[in-house]
Image (cartoon, rainbow, N blue to C red; front, side, top):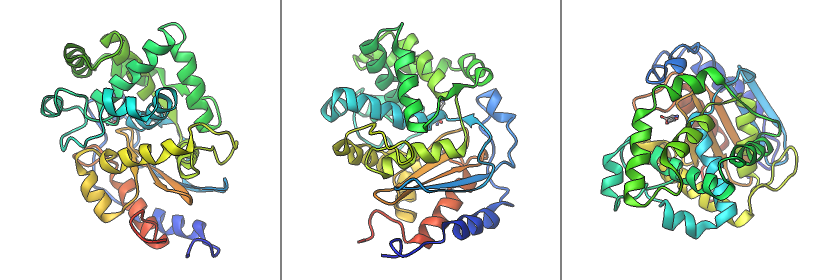
Length: 314
Ligand code: GLN
């Protein structure tokens, strides 16, 4: 009810920005050398409403690594192509309770990738796409789909890609392990490399806001008005975000905030209030699970102020 009256989004993001701008907790991801060097002070907040209004404050133009937030849009593409049952059967939809790159998680869930938003499941999902399109055409197809979500062409940050590709042996091992269990649907090293490149997309907070806004708007990009995923699939994507979007701390996140969300180790987090708006926040320092500290604080503040929570009767 609150939101149908005029809401002063600008005032709320302003408050959220100022309240947490001096937050000192958290550390940049350091297992990917490029991310360790990014300026930790950068901080930006964007809200994109269902009807395409954009509200922003702080650093919303700097392009940072999309990292795991890409997993959501890879999932959208795979679900749109193959349907929701294939995602359930070939990837899974269970929380692991373990870090995003956990090997034991694979062992404990019937040797399955568990879900599309951890590294194992994201690489398996990517492998569905690369085997479908073929190695030669896959990048162009995925690139075009991501561009539609952002409403502009995205580019890979080459330095980040190189930095991550030179240090991603652990992900290669996971891809190979999945292959041995029959849950990798293309060459594991090709899929791992392709996934690494997807994680290296440069996005700014505004891009993430529009991408997330598409999910808040039932699958239609609120700015370009183009439909990118069938409406019936959007709740499935949000359900997976709501159970695993912040890795092993998703339970606490949903308890405190109640918005399906996705984080990336580049410092971005997106949150979706279905049918209303999306929030995207960028700030590099992360907590132990790999989620941006300031982004979590800002999103919690905004969602409290707007009474935005998927579990609250609207
Ligand atoms: N590319 C990163 C990795 O595979 C993404 C991890 C993340 O953002 N949680 O390790």
